[in-house]
Image (spheres, rainbow, N blue to C red):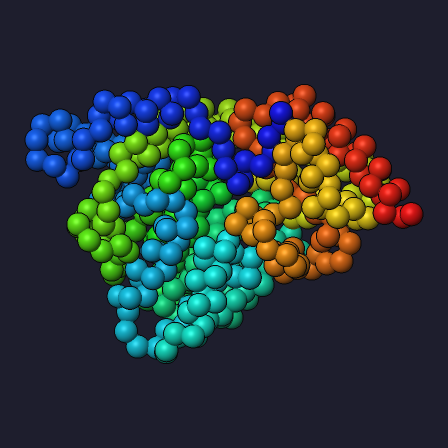
Length: 381
């Protein structure tokens, strides 16, 4: 099997699975309970929180654990807007993940709320000139992704933050970091809120985090038992948190080596795929995007058909976001970049992890070339 759909989800690291399993079998206590074994588990959770915060150069009190990227994104948006009064202008882009984009679509019907969608350039990056023009004194929130989940385009967050501070100093800046965290170097992120998802980092599904800068007026998400400083109620997911912590430890130790290896694999795959006639990259050049995402079009072939042909050979890729995999119609992200017609219909996303190999890139590309040649002949009949 060659798995090239790591932007959808990743295989859990052995160390992460073992940490989660130990927590489920041995350290299974609810950290909200009052006796000593529960307190010991709570101490482990807080130590994990501190290590995660350190990756962002943040304080542990600024991090909430969630169920994953979707909850983190939803909570960031709704939690800030609920704390605001009066007319609000909120800004996002047309290429965001559905867990941001669909929230903004819903907010189009909210009273005293104006929603603005930014465009992108031909490589899928946010247009800072459009952001500058869209920012006004009554702008309340800007939400943009760090790395596009379909093309690997990296947005200029520092440039965006500088514009927001200059033109809308009272606005909050939320960043969807689901595809960026761990894949780009750790360090402070220029924003007020930042979303993380564990299963994109070889941690278990069902765990994530949200960074909320201390100065942000924020009303949180789920209401109930008062966990996470009363900002996200619900029984603490200790197996997920400690699994994420184990995965984060591996990333902290190996991040630069893993990033270089993914770039090597991505560039090898791109070179191989571009040798196929009429193929083309959608998004930035391989070295200019994130290390793990490559989107390539094969006009004359339907991406869905090619995906299933490759799956029969146990080579797994995607046609775009897993959250939109069962929705028919045009690809919103590629359309925003100006990728239309046969080029859009023939697009595939290849997403890598640190454990893919150069040999896999050669095998996968050869299989793609064979299937594209066959399917093009078939479709011309």
